[in-house]
Image (cartoon, rainbow, N blue to C red):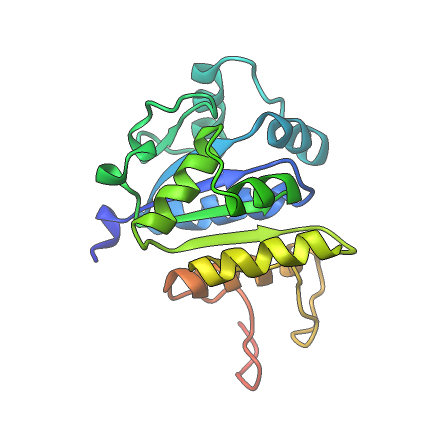
Length: 206
């Protein structure tokens, strides 16, 4: 598929690791992929806490803030989590892929149960029913039996469970190297060619 026509939903929920979601959107936008950004109420709170970015109260201000942060135009869209009339809520307008990064255990549990109380949960449900890639990036530790059972249920339903577990064999020197490793693994699952980290047995990045 022509990347200029590729459309990915990136959702940020209320788990630690909002930097992964921002970095993924940055890479996709730089490579001409259209983005629909979704941020839960708790996700906005964590985003502000972890990054220092002020998360506005109004939908229009949020869209303006995100476009300013990424220095982009209408290549990026944003919808409030309560807006179940957004185009991405319908299977007839399903995106090419959905990534929930980070994915809280609450969001993961509701998606596993088929609950669609907000737009993030609905879009994830649409991805599963339309057989589109659904990548969930949980960031929680330790995991209890319910967390593991929900992940297994989703994996059996067709979702990709991709925990935020950076490796160290590439000898990361900065936090950004750890972030890029996880984002690179997400891009691998999306079928995107990238050079965000040194692969095992490959030549060092220059």
